[in-house]
Amino acid sequence: MFGSVADTPVGKAIELLRETVGTLEPRCLGGDDAARLLELFAEAERLAAAGKALAARRVEETNLWRHSGHRSAASWLAATTGSSVGAAVGTLETARRLEALPATAEAQRAGRLSAAQAREIASAAAADPGAEAELLAAAASQPVAALSQACLRVKASASDEAARHVALHRSRRLRHWSDADGAFRIDLRTTSDAGARILAGLKPFCDQAFADARAPRRRESTEAYAADALVAMAGAAGGGGTSGPRAVVHVRVDHAALVRGHTEGTEVCEVPGVGPVPVATARAFAGDAVFEALVTKGVDVVAVAHAGRSVTAAQRRALEQRDPTCVVAGCGLSQGLEIDHVDGWALTRTTTVERLARLCRWHHHLKTYCGYRLDGSPRSWQLVAPEHPPDGGGGGGDGGQGPPGTKQAAPTLDLGLTPARAG
Image (cartoon, rainbow, N blue to C red; front, top):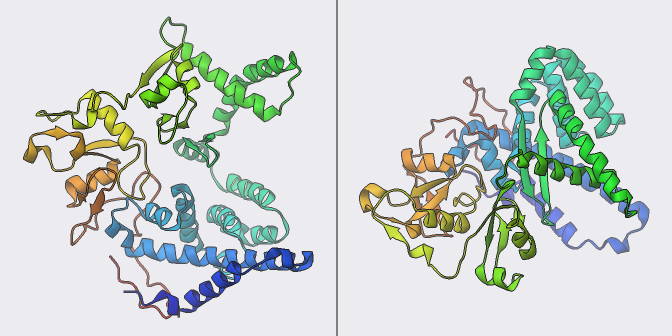
């Protein structure tokens, strides 16, 4: 068990930093003092990132993350630090690589490398260890963008071209989310040739978007026209030359808001998994798309129950509204969710919305096969681990990995903490 973190050197340093930031009045600083203070905070940030990576790697090795029901060490790290799973995967991957790159590891521990610099160098030096010194020198004198390009060249020259292309293809992905402003965002990772095909297909739509803006003398950025072009390309692809609807858009909207024309109070009008949309936009969808609005006043779908095991369409829609993401606190996955009979249909022989919950595949697996259970009620479910959680099983699709087959004792750090036991 860990001792009191507040009594460790790290805990005391954090408390002092918290007090300093809490009482900081930047308007009392001159420009030179503010610049120096920024440099100090940046160094503290680099040192904290190095310490976080070292500690996260040890958590991964000890399997502690399994005991809280997470699908991988990366999932646990993301929930603990408030970061994305992708960022957590990168942190752990860099920490593993640095174990074989002592010069880069020392530079990071000394606060000379940011997390981004360490990640770039570790990725390239893992492919060509001989380039480590050159890349460290580049990090000291070049911006991150230039360092990234240098690392890409190292990886390209150190790997088989065909094999690298295959690996990139296997790592392809497209993710989307809504940012803090409610804007729809896309992140695409694919091979260069696939990217070239996308850009080539997008070009005529970009040209058309530019032409459409020229007539009314509307001037916007090239990036804005490219965004319009992507939407237009998606619309054209959805047509397919058929007489049916061009797209399928599901909108969840309160009936009162749909009738009124705008939302009020806690009323909702949104595309599930994408974000809020104006009621006027939802109405416009009905003209050229399959438009489904879940009416939240009228039939009380929550109370619908039947003796069969399958979930009715009304119940499914109610669950999608109530549980837009996996119900396990801190999970947040919204894709590929599975419906779980909380009490077990074999025991109750009834299917009610109140005793159904949507879980991601990993947490559904834990509940079904690993002795975990869901306690509580809708919107306040708690995943409870068995007294002795199983240590078996692999990481999930977010890139988490279990500890290597051969474990080496980690060096002891004098932090005033009792060493953790392997899970």
